[in-house]
Figure 1 (cartoon, rainbow, N blue to C red):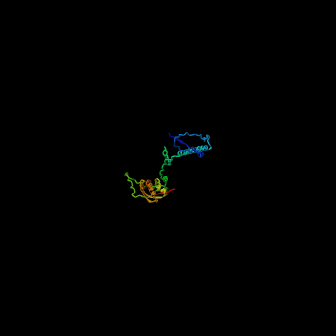
Figure 2 (tube, rainbow, N blue to C red):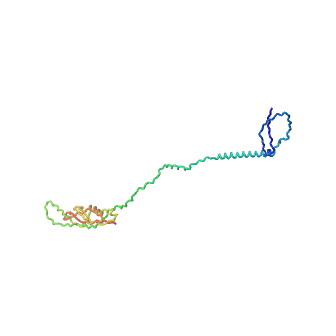
Figure 3 (cartoon, rainbow, N blue to C red):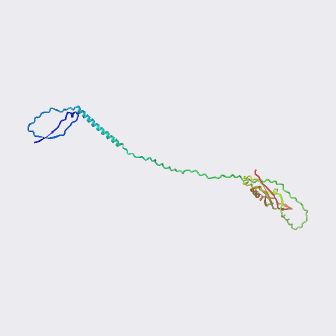
Length: 261
């Protein structure tokens, strides 16, 4: 019967010196049956039970290499972890400034200054002058001379009134015969313009002493002064003039002077 024998080669000294163990692949060979008895002899080589310095160094080197490899793997793992942890997704921030807050609503309405109304400058008006005193030299009243007619016996027949003279009597300056004369009012416009002068009026005084006709004989140079004189003299009153004991109409001149102080 055939048997299989496994042959192993021992490590050479050179391999042990390098700290390596070389193993050869097992080889199988057919062993022929031995018919003769084989003499066995104890081998002289005995494996050493104490590790040599080379093996210790090799073991230390292997441990160091293993530790270095583990440390390298740990560092690489930490770097990867750090790199993985430091990866931050950057998001672009919105730098648009926020809209300004709406203005606070005031409870009170804004006070708007009142518009200044246009006020025209007042016109300077002089106070109305009081009645002006017209300086007139009034001669003493003329005392009519009474002529006593001789007494003639008259029958009891009714006496007819003497006819009034048809034509007025020229009386000259009638200023002395005025019994009621209100001074004329000085016109305001003429007073502002400092207008002055004397108006000579031709007056027709009736038998009752009232003005029947009035005309301007000589103007003062101002229409307003002339009109003021006409208005005032038209209201004056004269003493009735008599001729032969009968009242008659008289025509004469009346000067009216306007003067400012």
